[in-house]
Length: 263
Ligand code: NAD
Image (cartoon, rainbow, N blue to C red; front, side):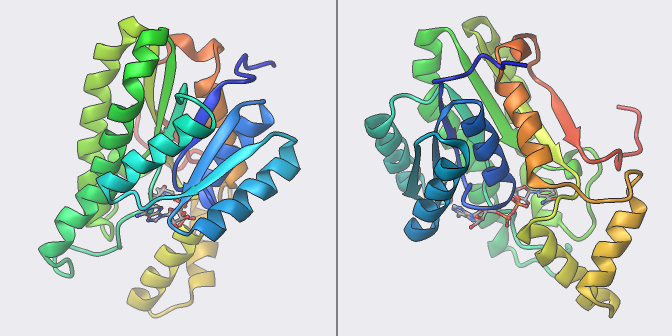
């Protein structure tokens, strides 16, 4: 199916690896002109080159620390100069450190809010004026299954993503008349370095190995496996498509059936 987004300008943040990279690759494969970023300029450049080679489209890679509002503004200026105003935005950042109420220091809360909630708010503020003038835009936020089912060892992530979910739902209604859709994609368990980090944290707590934790994650999933970033990227590309124009304000799980609730 042609998603109708060939030539559209797409910005995917925190995308030199993992789920962000999966989204950037799929959008590039659909013919979008993609910008990616990473804190490390070299990693951004290398990933951009690799995606260009794989998909045959030019990809722009730039350095930005998403917990810094100034860096986000510089990132947006760089993308505007190199490609133009983003028409598709996929917001993503690394997850805050794992921890429980007992193990989380009070100073960590604000950092987590800056990284996971405010980075998306700043990015969205930066791209919506042009989307509104054009009467077309797609905003997709990578959040987590934890917004439906909080995860005990991810206190900071649960808190910050709940706030982001409330923000997204509110602006989805406000921006719908301008032809802009706003949705969240909720990863369950996908094979990325984030899952390796969480498996190592749980392995230490449960006195077992990270491999055993990953095996347990696979067996507990109805699909008996964990996802690949390309599964996730394909869902993001569909939400960015012209066909998805009537889907907005939604929280869509990509989790192999792991969430057991009704809604
Ligand atoms: P990942 O660790 O593979 O990639 C995260 C990327 O974010 C890395 O490239 C990292 O360098 C970058 N990053 C971290 N802090 C940054 C900052 N301040 N500025 C710029 N870039 C920064 O993780 P992932 O699995 O791709 O996860 C992406 C998001 O999805 C994370 O927020 C994660 O918590 C969430 N998530 C992932 C899963 C999963 O199954 N992988 C499940 C639920 C939620």
